[in-house]
Image (cartoon, rainbow, N blue to C red; front, side, top):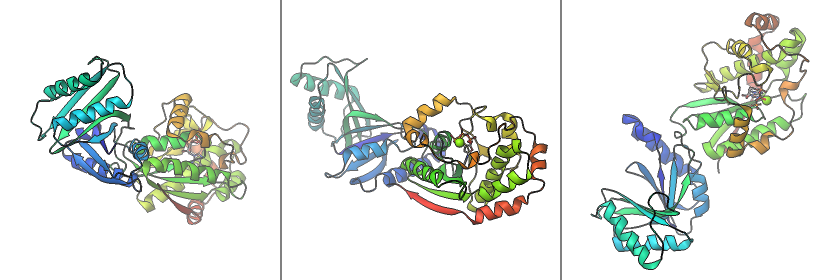
Length: 387
Ligand code: ATP
Ligand code: MG
């Protein structure tokens, strides 16, 4: 195997922006494949051709490409010249690799130097295969398919197709800041928007010294998994304990969780303003816990008027979120025990239908700006890279 051909769906529909999307995809692919021994990554007629050096780690190249957002699927096979004899030979060799019951040949050409209609290529290659292996052609439901993609003076023949994550290349939707707890939902939320082209950085609030550092370790490991898709990210670690103590001292206990959240989003919004993030992202899902009723969500939003909070999981069931967490590789980390800052001084009965006025009353004795400023100043930022 010495070449991969990556296909994308959605980017192709972007009209004049198409170049911008394709450039981002090529750039991201190159970055994703650093150190794997690839030779060249190049745009080619609505697909991307990835050529490999002889010593490349093929499986690693496939695995990493399959995580690059924007890619619908990848064909992994052998590069060929526009030469029918060579194409026949490679097709047969690929089929001989693994047993099969029926097969199909599917050729597609774009500006190929091989001037032969695709249908004829299918017939020629098909009968060459049947000359060597006794197997029926099945065009509707073949057990094995050999795809032949030809363009200019090159092409790729492959039998193996690997599904990509779809979506849009990271970066084309701008930079955003995800509030990352150590739990299941927020990493999935961040992943969903990275798949829509957001370049996501993370902010995690911890309760040290009242808690141990376990939530920070969680956030770091989760950000590490997400960086496999994003290729790089910053993780801002912010102490919330001082602000929490103020809230506990001055506000009704039932309002604590909502006030913690309002404080978090204020700090995050200030960070976004400073760093140029276009929106915040949270893992809220409607009604999942007390802090996620529509009333409480509104009370949280009210703390940062004019700042967009994206909540991609708002309409998802827990099980759907869990399934996705397993798929992207964050679930096992998220389900470990850790000390979350929000359970500090957790009241027995948190308000489920808070009103903005209650929140404002609770905050009336606090110097919010000072708390936000102090927390922001105490932040620590870690750069997370992949690989
Ligand atoms: P998660 O599984 O993401 O922790 P959850 O179901 O536990 O979500 P909450 O604890 O109410 O729900 O948190 C809602 C959202 O608030 C989280 O998805 C996350 O975006 C944000 N959040 C909560 N705690 C923190 C934290 N310590 N640091 C950063 N963001 C947080
Ligand atoms: Mg949580």
